[in-house]
Length: 289
Image (tube, rainbow, N blue to C red; front, side, top):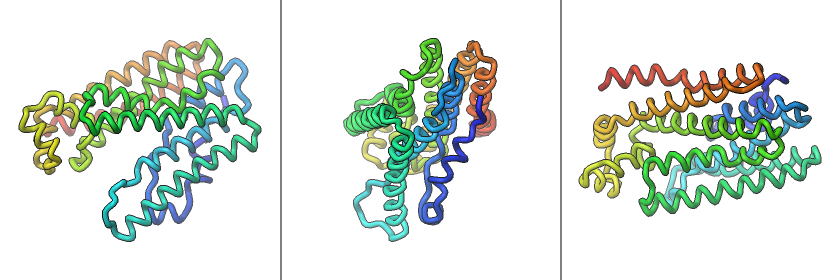
């Protein structure tokens, strides 16, 4: 199997001085791209464009994630924040344009169609989730599952080009990787009270909390002390840590059943990357409790 070098190839498009000076980009979707590249490059007849497909998937995902970082507040903002917002818009558009350009150069018109349809579906899912959240019609588990779908929907575009024998394992592992990533994101959000609104912990409290607590969240009156008290009372970090342990175990069990030793080794390594942040965080929060 060819060496994995997609993050290095993507730097040609992401490492621009203006972006690095005036704004920030989302994290590179490394685990999903590594998973995609591993499956594409490990076909019975490895795909000629496995590296290209993985690169454009990374650029499209980065484009969408960059746009998701844009603050939609319509009020007055300082010039520096306005410049950062404008550059996020431009950077997201730029990454998406590179996707079209690279595939068109390679004559991969059908893949342009597949990925474009995937992007449309992701945007529909985002709007549906946004509406449900605004209407407070989301449970904590609904939220988690819909976030996983948002993480994985684009990558469904590659399912039909995989060997038939690989499809089931690909779908199981794609969902598993998406679940691990979402829970890791939620653990990171639980460390920052200002990001509590709309998180898994937020919806969990709306599911399980007292009327007073629910009202405090609904009125957007929650300060950092209130949020910290909720995180401790409902053991949010510990619950998320347990979910992550289970998700990683599921991924590693599914990976270990694959026939290709090379693929097994690669995917187990990715699984370990999910486990690494878990133990220090779990031990620290255990001490706090």
